[in-house]
Length: 404
Length: 64
Ligand code: HEM
Ligand code: SF4
Image (cartoon, rainbow over all chains, first blue to last red; front, side):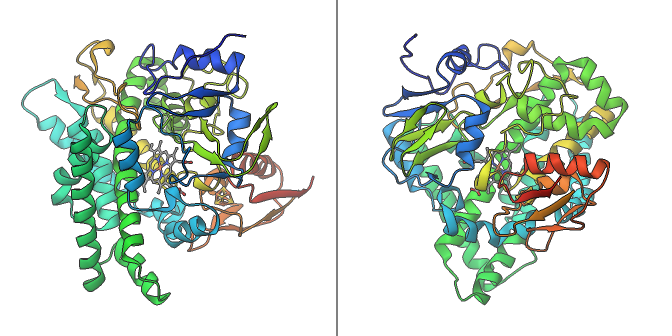
């Protein structure tokens, strides 16, 4: 059997949408195996969909980042430290503590509540496209004109974070997740952002408004449990997870659709097919490959191996989503595939809280953009787009020149 | 077909509601609520999908 030296992170995708060749080989030859990690340490690499899903749904695997072997591939020591110092949130909790945090805001993200936001999101998207159409010069960069402002506006309105501060919170978030920031830059960005959100939470505690954070504060107050640190953790998590992710997915989705004109034509002709297309784009792009990192809390026998207690585990969401077993011809984009069992939002108790908000934003953006600017095209060849192949957390594009 | 939904296990992902809003609903706190526990025909097929995509194994088919 071939020995694998390391699984490099950030993983270099041979073509912007292909999975790294090393991932394919691991999945075919050593679907669960211990690998050394870029930046130090080791972890079990879980390559296939079936075992990946089982592990993510299994309470014997912990998301507690303070555990010594919590896998953070591609992170240097400074980044590991910083990642551990993030304000605690549901994203790093287990069991009943996790459920209590998540359930405190779950009601804000029901399919019904989000459907009621549709007209507002549509208006936000239309205004951004008005601005694109009014621009005097082309090509223009889709990232700052559409991909980023749409999710950023939506999440800031929902949370009650003033959008006038968007340049502040977007740039700090970008510094934290970008591949080319210095350790000091990252740590300052985190301090500034947590300082800002800490003050915002205090303001809302004294002067509640009609927004998610105010409602959460009120709920906690009634329960007699007004923990400002926990509120800060929630605000930090929702703001960050709510804009960078969807922004990357908008950019990559636009590129993927432009590269597959026949499938783009299908959704242009029948927007009823857009939800299925969004689902397939989520699978195909898998922007949060590392969304399935865990630590085993006891020995677990799975897929012919025993993962010992305290070992780190990486369920590669990208590898699971390119597994030909559940997704025949997995490297092809096929909006008719019916692949809702993808793991782009993870699986188990931590499955993305904002998934239906993301779905709604993506559907509205793709439908509206290609309806209002049907001749939209890339302004540079795809291999000149700066993909985030150096970014350890979210895959995407740093900029996206388009024209029409 | 008969279904049950375990509100203790549910993590409010809403995947079931996306699958069939005539069978699955979420209460104000985001937790699953069955609108019927006996879906028939196409709705029964969709319920099988809902069971498969639910991230928390909260929905169970208790009778064929
Ligand atoms: C296309 C866009 C998005 C993708 C691909 C995505 C992906 C993910 C993934 C993979 C996880 C699971 C992590 C794990 O299991 O360890 C997750 C968790 C989470 N996501 Fe998203 N996400 C997206 C958009 C959003 C949005 C818009 C929000 C807005 C609120 C959000 C909020 C969260 C939260 C709060 C968690 C943690 C849930 C928990 O730990 O229980 N996400 N997301
Ligand atoms: S899919 Fe499962 S976890 Fe999600 S709301 Fe329905 S029952 Fe709950």
